[in-house]
Image (cartoon, rainbow, N blue to C red; front, top):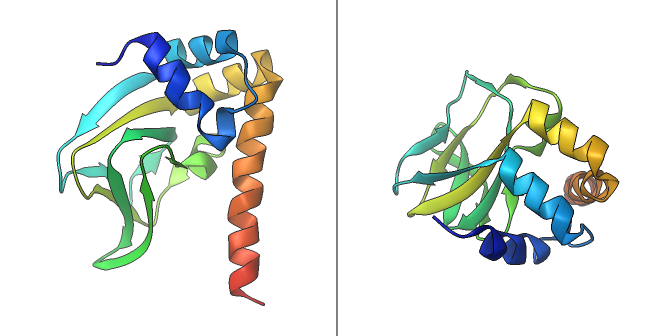
Length: 140
């Protein structure tokens, strides 16, 4: 398990949290939990309710529909932001492709952090906008 200071330094290097203060990031870390997954382990199961945002401290995951890989995320990237903001039954699975360590924060705690620390809300919005730009570029 990493120390809070180490996690703050990692979060500062992630676009979603780059503008947040160290104090805001410390609050965020305390509101989340560190989770570890073995290679091949399912993190999010298709057909199950998900209400978590994940921040990859280390590792790589694949977002899959059956055997088809739809996207991947790796160290210092985030996933699950949509279902963290609007909890829903997911239509994909997320599988650890290698040993993976992540911070996981629930929808409830994420909303609390966004309310207390607008810089975190701004960072999450930036992540969503970048995802929309990728989708938009696919359809041009």
